Image 1 (cartoon, rainbow, N blue to C red):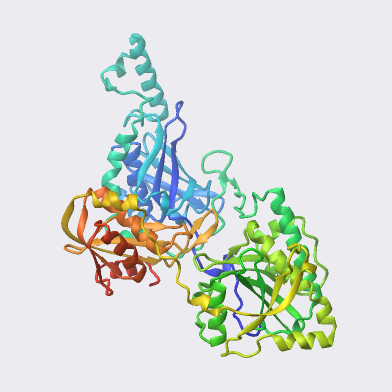
Image 2 (cartoon, rainbow, N blue to C red):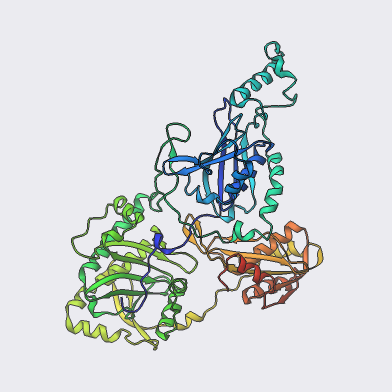
Length: 608
């Protein structure tokens, strides 16, 4: 390539794309009855934290020793190798405090084991049921469960069976054979009982500790960048036995038949363009545009190649495309590839050698039944999607038709590339110089009454480019009047709050791929107390909407609104200024972000 850096996705991005929370299923094994809990936990807690969670949610009295067994190769082993019986409880807990949960549970279905009381041997299977984004809630809590925990020191699973028999005998009035247990088993003990509220009450002190600001960057803000690994296999052949590998999660695995057909059309169009190989005539900045027949907006079309080869074909979406290419011609793009990525909104096809395909690409080839390419370099295809709020990810099927149309139009230039005079004419119409923004570009425009799916219905015309669209600000957010009215009805406290938001350094995985989430935070200025923050992974919501939502929710939970709210950005001032005019809050501009700014940096923000 000649002008733009080469980008790659998935494994070589260096991004940690895991969710922020796990839903764990904690189940007691070897009982004749079902005893289990499902708990929402932060993903980056330690195993010592998890020990406290199990103790609280079952519940146990934590009067005995315990240990975790974690995956090592194809077996489960203790954190302390071959511990002798004189190893202390502190030895186990010191080891657990150094081990993070998401280092051992890396994929849906992976698991570890927890034993409590080496005498009774209460063995718990802890399995990762779901990965949850921050929008699922950031507070540790029990979601559901079944069955009461066994009585302490009852003799393990056999003793629990005797306890259950005694309880049933009491119910039926038949205690003759079990009188020896009668005084030992509490009268009110019910093996089938489970109370969700009680479980969460026991977890509340630990949940409060997780939300303490001294630990918040380790709980919800910026998890360490760890190798995602291959995941933990499912257990077979008994506890701590050998396993089969989990099936890899793939974003293409649920493609509908219509989506597979759309990708086949896309692959055919891409193969046609790749086969033309006229690319030694074009440089990366010699772009064309495609006019949307419905909106008139322009999508910019760039071919990346050199020496007769094509590396990629990219289609840039408005309005980000206007900004990207104007900055490009002005020579103002940042040198940092990661920063540059966040200014790109495009779909593309990359032509690569076979070994460069990633697992998602191989699955798509199989599911969509792509033809095997002919021999030669850069013949395999992979499709990607870039967005300023997202990490580069696989191409959504819904966007495949856009790229297909652009490739068909590009393929329709075959006659131009074969005619030296026509090619010279096209070359003279293309932008060729950096640091000068072209006034016009060749634009594919649909003829009146033409069929948009027919490349022959489009003309390549010279059109003036409205670069000023790059300067158009997004429509200002205005809070709904009903939300403003609810806030205006709250009592006013003699407090000042400072509110702010930034993008998180590490993306959050969503069903639509990894997203640059927005972290919003409110701090009470008098004492620096931080209210529970909010992480927004819906990439469609603008930052001003996110901070408004946090303010509305925080005031609603508190039951009052502050006397004054400090904001630090134009969008926030605009949004809250509108609310201030309706009597909901008094707003003050505070560009320094004295308190919020420091906390957001600690939480791994990237800045405004």
